[in-house]
Amino acid sequence: MPTTFKLLFVCLGNICRSPAAEGVMRRVIDEAGLTETVHIDSAGTAGWHTGKRADQRMRTAAAARGLDLTSLARQVHDSDLANYDLVLVMDRSNHLDIRTFDREKKHLEKVRLFCEFCTDHEETEVPDPYYGGPEGFEKVLDLLEDGCAGVLHHIQQRLGKAA
Image (cartoon, rainbow, N blue to C red; front, top):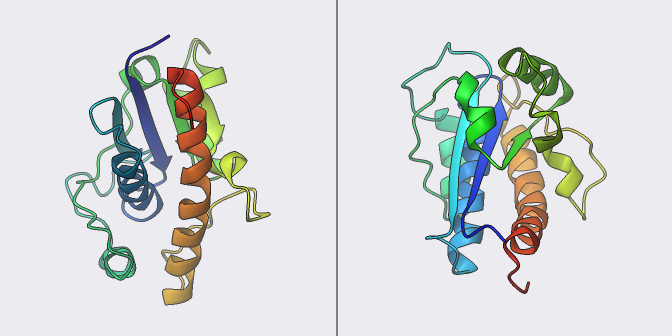
């Protein structure tokens, strides 16, 4: 059984969905008492926003739910796929894009769509809220809160800890 677990959330620019997923998951992990066991990060398949904070609209929506999104955007590195136990992408486009970082196709089994872990929502992808209104950011957070509970269960199983 592993003693630690490394989790990476990935979206396109790493300023909306993946930093929000990181923030939601940090709270879930903290509440489960696994802060010292689970390493959480986020990245984007594109590097346009490298070094920037999450989109202000996402930070505002997250803050209303008691979440502080503090990460800075970064682009996925080739080494990420080897270094993380689970890489959760927000949509099918991200899933296709991440393959460019796995040229030898060694890590395909650890790259999964985030919504596979949702139990209360039927969506198969987390929609990009960037070009929409406030309701899009709320929808993303609803999906993330749902799916992160499933991700926690998955991690607990992998670590051999009771849920």
